[in-house]
Image (tube, rainbow, N blue to C red):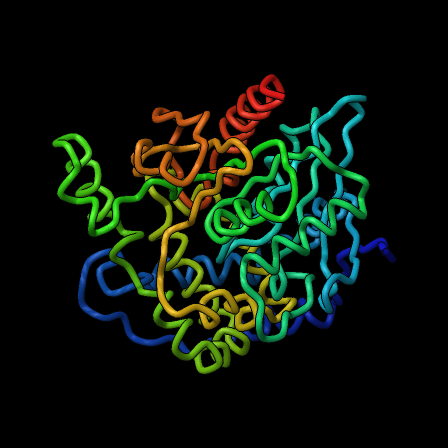
Length: 362
């Protein structure tokens, strides 16, 4: 039950080391091709690396993150880092927010400002950021049990659990552990399987074809890479900030999904990356991949009503086979993996609509 206050305090020596490594990069020659055809463009990466070394102000972003009340507590052998931002509203609904990969709790820094009517809890997943690394045997169900225990320690019940990317796998599992008001998923429910393709109508078939053509479905196969040899690649990411920057930029570019260009959210991107760098969690954050046997879309649940931020590209009637779908908008602003960072106001407004709906169903 020991909950300890926590504050981010990166040493001056760690900052100096990062800047030195960035300025001593041995740059490869650019390969032929236009734009992102061969990966992250060299000129763009040089410019961003220079900004990270000499223009980006970690101390300002560190101070901003430290404005949120932060804590650590040990659950199931892991020291979990979390933000706990209570509301001044007397009957506020607790919200449990779960980030994904390759993100961190930083994903919600702007979003929290739009959620003042809620008690907000944001844990860092095991092995991510300031949460310690898990041992073997961890899966999303085990994370869900830890999340439920965390909310119990904080005195919360009847809460709404949110998740995107890896969080979209964790959030339904939390509902299976214990009673929650509702489960809110960024996207990923109702994706057709091979056996569903023959049943799709023309509009559904077109939407599915559009989804399959997107960068996030056809880019670097990080699932296979991190399932096969995460230790091998972690050496480079842990030692070379430019290698880590290129890897993160590749995934943020592929995962954009119609949201703002990376250049327009660069400081948020670099803050997230800096958390990975300073905590040396590039390898430990990949446990969900190397602990899996292959890729599968998130599973629904029927213990609590479910809402999504973006129904598309999923198909509601398919999602309803596993979930009690009560909220399925199709016209929210785009942004895919990083929508909470990209469109925090729109995301918060839709999440609030879902909470109002599930509270009225009690």
